[in-house]
Length: 101
Image (cartoon, rainbow, N blue to C red; front, side, top):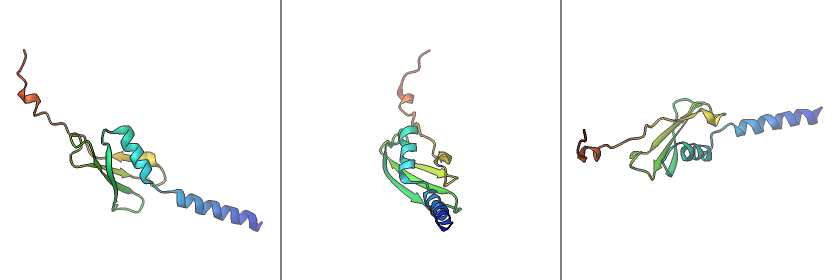
C-alpha cells in the first residue's frame, strides 16, 4: 500500500515539474511560424502566475525591427502560446516605382 502511495506522490511531483513552458518550445514556435530567425530569447515578467511572456530579438530586422513578443496563457500547454507582434512592411521602395496604368 505504501509503495502505491509513494508512486502516486512521485507521479504528481513529476507532472507538476513538467508543467512549464520551456525556451525550446518558444524557439520552435518562432522558427516554424515566423521569419524572425531568433538571435536572443529572454523571459519577461508576467502579470499573472499562470501566464508566461517572452521577447526575442530577431535577425530579420526588416520584418521585426524591434523584436517579437510571445505570450502563453496556459503554462501546461505550449499550444496556448501566441505571437503578439505583427510583422512590419516598409513600402517606401514601392513609392519610387513609376505608376503603370
